[in-house]
Image: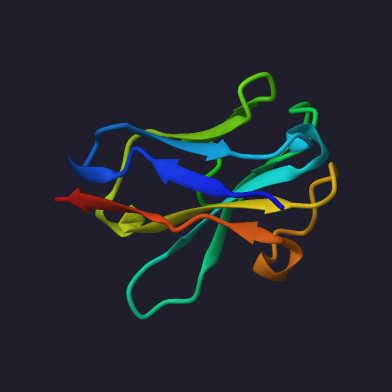
Amino acid sequence: QVQLVESGGGLVQAGDSLRLSCAASGRTFSSHVMGWFRQAPGEEREFVAAISGSGNYADYAASLKGRFIISRDNSKNTAALQMNSLKPEDTAVYYCAARSTPQVGAGYAYEYDYWGQGTQVTVSS
């Protein structure tokens, strides 16, 4: 069982940066892909980024590549999402998720076994 707790959300202005963190419980953290998803009001949950268990491979939603950076620290059981040049359309609840395999998948929410409670990110114009 893996428990995930996100932190770092908040209200920022367009153009600002924000760093989200995800703390994971459990002793097999490096065996799990870590992913970030987001969900805006009235929208479906969408893939943001994922990182392999070793941290050597990362995948991003095409529209976010270059602005968002995913990372992990297996010694601390944490994952992070650095978000730069934020836009109002980035406003959403951001979720951390863990997949019970070290290989990054296709980016579908159903591939992930564990989810955090979400953290709100609001970007004002």
